[in-house]
Image 1 (tube, one colour):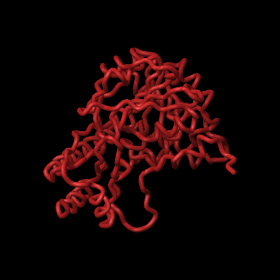
Image 2 (cartoon, rainbow, N blue to C red):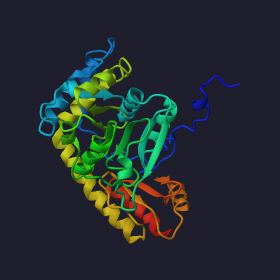
Image 3 (cartoon, rainbow, N blue to C red):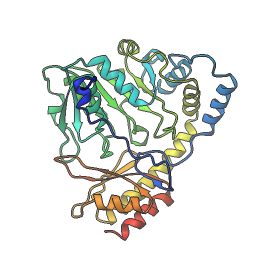
Image 4 (cartoon, rainbow, N blue to C red):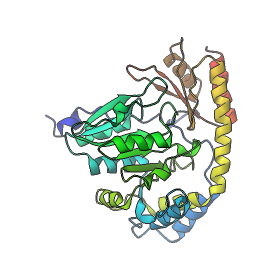
Length: 353
């Protein structure tokens, strides 16, 4: 006898990338930043600790929202803190968005292959998920923006995972204008891309941007993300979020992080340089390494099965992500590490392929 809802009973559940608790590994499997966060983060958290943790945190993370509004003003004219909602990582924002806009039996649209959590969120909600396949060149057909019965929300990771590919802002706006529902542009990796979609938020009330500090700010362990949308949408999302969904230390650390844009620029430069070398190295080994706009490289192989390569790398102390999408080629998604970490991975693969 099961006491849980039938859709939860049937749910496979989202499986995050491995986080080994023992042994020594080079971790290139969960798109973490290989470098320490800005020293400004530690300074801000230490100051928050001195103030004590006996009181509840600011439920709206006002300090972060004020600073973020200043930072994004050139891209979003007229932005105020009311355009921003903070969360416990961007996954929290994706959950809030799903709960805000999609009812039981209604429809969520997402591209395929992409972030596998999206489908899980729909299933938890008791909603339906419709996947629209990417074209072979990782573009999206007009099917993605077609009207459908019960369609209430669409997710578009940009850059996409696992491919690292990017859809140009004007094409994103075209998709949003055709859709009968809001479009969530998940920009978790966008600080590693050549451009972004921030400017579209002021041009369309349908467009909602989500971002995280886990990747480009090297704060995966802090759990802090935010959404940017027009205030009338943010107001509705506030009704759904947990009362205190970000803690005092996260607010302080995140605010310190975005204050240090010089650190971000230098970190981005290092990651992009090592990403280019990793892409070239995997291509030289015969992989169809897809040119990436993120901090990882998607590497299918035209001839060899790649799962045994993943297993051999793991046995040698290097974790990468093996991903298999039915109806699509499987591949290795390799996070960009330091030069030494990348070379360790490439060196092992040279002996396998």
